[in-house]
Length: 443
Image (tube, one colour):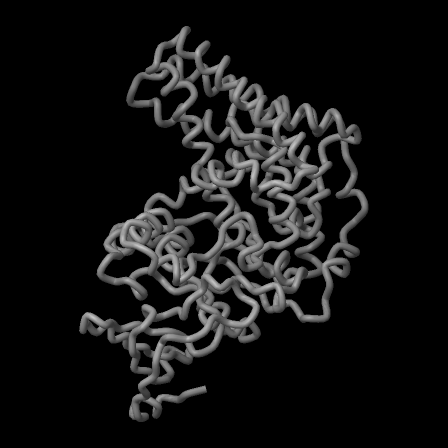
């Protein structure tokens, strides 16, 4: 590791045109500098951390500065973890789980009761979602215009509970009857125009490949080559991973669930049935809403709650697995237990959100075993915290946490995990600088 004396060390010139790391996607180009440029490198120590300063010299003659750590975060250093927790908006950043610990080791410490399906509790969740969503629609119908955002927030959060019910069905943790789960899951997803079976197939892969480069079907870091591809795509990606990231699940919904080419031949019959159900809902449900309330009513009663749902869908998903200290790894380096325990974040939200969304953000036990019903997640979490608590990531939902994700977790880098857009393409990163300047920093 370099020391403070390295500030006076000779500068080194090297070409940034490097081959991608072995085993990674060929789309990955060298991170930290644009392809084909020369960079000046020096290592130094600042605020207790080892850093590498790269000064990319672009072909058009401009000089661009970036500061990159020379080594990944040292999670075995308690002082560094506390410092990172404070900087990133966490209550705790866990120690690195030892390599010899398996997912089965963690799962075996869970009490058997947390895996038990309780029909009363399962259908009680359905009752909570149906009644709370109906109440939300009632609020929308009665609220004056200036209170509509509050009514939309309630209705959109309530309908997010429908998704969680379908989510339990997909993981076979709602009912002992598979047909019941398929029917309830499909119906629960319909108001969201989400095709149940396509989502289920892709979501299973997310659990099997959590935070694995290329393979995980949830969030992925941006590849350097994507940033270099075209000016239009670069601007779209910067907005998508910056200001509009809390709604990027809409793009994910469109890209992953309606393209038949993304599914195996044995999956296609069930995929087509789900798509037919979604299109039927749109063809029948939307005209009925418009017939009764007009286009403005469709916007007020369906579209705005749907946008709130996607806000939660995007926010929950990115908070679950995205932070500067949580790496995406290649399949050769990936460790299941570390990805599910170290790579998942427990985040506390206001209690009314937790109730309406059936504790989906008690998320660590769900990644230890997806078969745990949502109403047993808190008991499972308590058990994991008792036995493995020092390895867990814990946060309360706050401005600093969101600001960190939206302004820092962008482009993949093997050493640093993430590099911010405003370091890679500073001249086009005005949206990121805007967020850094104007987003609150309260933790």
